[in-house]
Amino acid sequence: MRSRDFFVTQSSGESSVPGESSNQIFIRFGSDVKEVGAVSEVSANAYAVPPGFQPLRAQFGPFRLIQSFVNAVLAHQPSRIVVQDLSGASADLARISAALGIETVLAIPDASLLEPIDAVAQRWTLGLLSCVSYVVSTDPNLSDVLYRNYPQAQLTQYDLLPPEPIIQREALEAFGYESYAFGMRDHALLTAMQQGLAEHFSGCQNVLDVGCGTGVFLECLQRANISAMGVERNAQSARFAKSLGLKVQVQDALDFLAEQHGTFDGVYCSHFVEHLPFEAVDQLVKRVAQALQPDGKAIFVFPDPESIRSQLLGFWRDPEHVRFYHPDILSVLGRAHGLSLTYNSQNIPGRSIGPFSLTPPPPSQDESASNPQGFRLWRQMLKRLGVVHVSELHRERRLRLHLQENLEQLWAVNQTWAWEDNATLVFRKTSHG
Image (tube, rainbow, N blue to C red; front, side):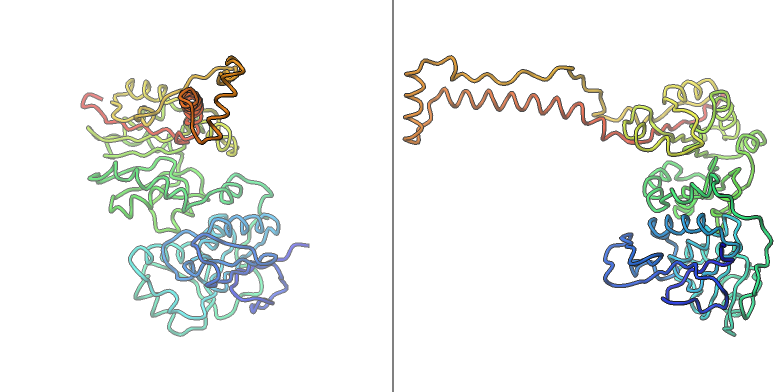
């Protein structure tokens, strides 16, 4: 029989919160864990996490810990998750729990944990406090800390953990897209992949992230001081983005775009087109152009069908992917709807398709077989004296050139593995669009 509660704690042993549950994730911070992100499992459901994840700052938790947490939630299907020790690592687990619709409780023994380190951390903490179900604390200073730093937060507070869950909900489905996706998303990696693209929107005043998911790119824009909002149809993904203090509209993206006419000076659409059939992609590009102001910028990012890695290692891990789209298709659709292509990542210098033969190259000729016996004996004698015949130098040079040609051909073929997994297209809305 599944236990009712699941605990996230930094201590070992039994839970200090009354209850019958033994389902716990233990997080231990220690100096023996040197590298940020190098999380190790020290025992069943116990993880050693770098000390850099202990402060409550604006950073995504370690991916391995998140994967283990999501797997544990799917296995135990708890009706309530209690975060007993709030930290940068456990806060991310609380966000995921709340996003999945599970009753999520923060136990806060010391209100000073909520004192913000900086403005970004304050925004993240406000988002966290706004998404959890309630807090458990006996610290008399909690109300003052909340009033000074998070006046917008409307929190229910208990002195003790209620014996039964307060929010009635159905059992978590054994498999659901977001339950799967949260265990596959490395938010820190996704941020590193996308943060450079925020520079394209420098100077923009109102950017829309279409199908913003959990808000990774919105966070990049926010930190670049670019005003932005997202639209996302999946309520669970949107809840996670909101738990970071980001602005997200929960609505079908195509329906939302249909209502916009010259509203935005920038539109970002990442990893969305591959979820749609062609007719819907055509409508998407048309409505993005419609939503843009004159001279507005649109960026589309999607799996590159010419990337071997994308074809073999990534694309089919997502059960909602429909098909690959070549950049040429999006380029034509953009032109048809008044968008002028200004950048295509496939056109970067040095990117080419290296031809190769189906048969291996012939081996280098060994001239010794065609030389007379006397000449071979003479060359061997010179070699013993430490002298190299000029024919040997010529032979070594031909062999080196032969190997160099083979290496260059091999590199020309193998360089296709170095292509980016994603294609990126940048458009400008023409004045007559």
